[in-house]
Image (cartoon, each protein chain N blue to C red):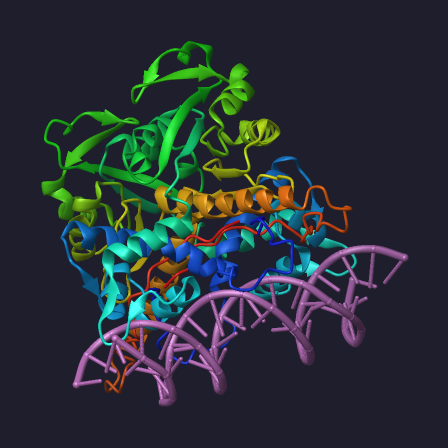
Length: 253
Length: 253
DNA sequence: TGTTGTGAACGCGTTCACAGCT
DNA sequence: AGCTGTGAACGCGTTCACAACA
């Protein structure tokens, strides 16, 4: 992946697996909910259930951060919230720009979960001159011409691309040129970026296609079950019942 | 993950790895672009570059589908488009409902990539009576009360949840109760569903937090490099330069 | 000659199961 | 007695490298 390669041999201990990183926000959300209910401690079992993972995985994940639990007791909620927040870099403020203020861009700008966790929408940028100055979610839209200046003035290192596919690479190049090193891409295109820049993508149509694949398979199985219908009902598989409940994880390159 | 477990021992050959399934839409997109430019064939190398993966991975992925290439030549674009579409179940029409027509729901309803590939927005549903009847993206919004009837009348098996977090589980339960077996969840909550129902989630705030983690790390490395500044400039690691260029991939739940 | 298809090696992530603390 | 922390086993996915073949 484009994820900033580690360069140095790594001092060991600073090696949190990517899969673990992807789950930390999940744990943090569950912990925050517990914190709001003033729950003082949780066991790995309870927290895992709330986050939708299994407890062994959760414990191993936490073990990469350090030994923050107490044997026989569980984890201190407040303390864990702090540790994970710190690990994720949420104790600092991250100014973010959103480029492309169409339906989606506007929705993102209005999204509450943004401000809540260390992220601040520093600016909205659109190529349409007619949009310029118009406030969206209380923030005036600025024109693409000023992109570089906006990035630099606000010290932005995270950019969100919500433009049409055709404009995405160009916007990406300008963002990167202006100093952005992390990009969240909603446009249905593969972005190419220099080494050291992280890209994560969110793609509605890909998600739907993956669902369709499984949906189709289910339909096929139903048909097969219909065929086996009249049969003496042997152990027909009963939907297997795996431990269930994994969570998607956007994997890096 | 909640992804439909395979039940039966699997006839072998029907075993396409989940990671491969997640990349098929990517290949399909690249192939569609080539097709529009009337390119007749591609090599694994070219196609892989367009899709942002490496060629060995692409060839192995295709090998799970069958032997659709020609040695010494490459792959026939049209043929591959068809094969992948069929494999993903896109040769049929998938009616989809979107629940929660706020900013995001409206953006999704307006999203063009929907209709393009086998998906059709069959209905928009919202809990706000004031929205009822109002058209969004040309489709009249219907009230939540009629959810079950809408699902059944339209034969919907894929639902998109774009409600606030608080309403998501309840909406999910009703969708599943009405027969939906695949859910794309935009609400920031862990949904619990019975076995056999697939859930994929798209979570802006999680994505940003993952980016923040890497961003923070980069800042840390810069600081370390500053420390090494005055030094005689040994091989300072030169960003290692791995084969580079992968792309994130949203993994299933 | 050029490119696919794939066995084999490898590495990462998950799960198991239990030793180690409280 | 209870729950965490983790070594070890396992399985999936990626990468390598080359044989097969048009």
